[in-house]
Length: 359
Image (tube, rainbow, N blue to C red):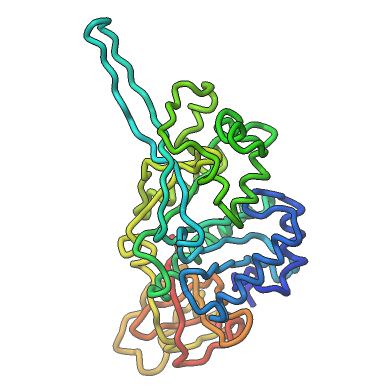
């Protein structure tokens, strides 16, 4: 059986998520039982389809080490960021040039203009992996990130035509945001951590308290200016992956910390285009799949194809509703699965599966 499993998070995962949150205590996963309880209930209702409006769904995935019985990581899909009851709020980053012929002086300014969208994109978020698992040979951080693209690809009608990913900028050693200290704090009297956590439930205070006129970043501190649209060291790998699969910087930033917003047309993301729905053609003993690559009866006229390192996933009518593992599979027309994977996912010949090659 597979050691690592990705599945839909549900309310019964509360203690496991609390352990993960207590260990890391990030903005995406705060050490707050009420917050986690609400997040997991929202996720379970989304997977179950109990939230009838698909734009209000939030899908949370958990990566579990089944041998150690611990939550290794998590990631999230917000079906639509920005609705009438909860707008998508951002700063547009605008370049402006000023020149005085009288003084013969030329200046280049960066302006921050508060913007709103009430029919925003699908958002990728909540990516967290325990540090001791980040360098595993299975590339677990990549898997818990990729699973979101597999889910979107095979449930395309539930998501928007644009996808957004917000990356963390450089933060101070104590976790503070230079931009928030120079700007947001003065308009809200809230710490960066408190404001970001509160905004996950309600962003009205930003719309109510922030200035609507453009803000000249040149009047802010140098450290605040340096954070605008920049990617922090801890998320450079994510930036590289996003650019590789089709995302671009949108000249928009998070109003709390200045983190850049990367966007892509959903149908043009390479991982979404690569994901497929297939049916199990054959189930072979693991030894044959890994070593002999023996052709099953009825396939003798074909030449054995090279196995693809892939995420293999299936749907369930009940909790956990979705489950995925990493496996070497032979592609269509007759998908070949190792027996251990078929047992883990409770698959039989003819069952539908979702496949995403992992490079």
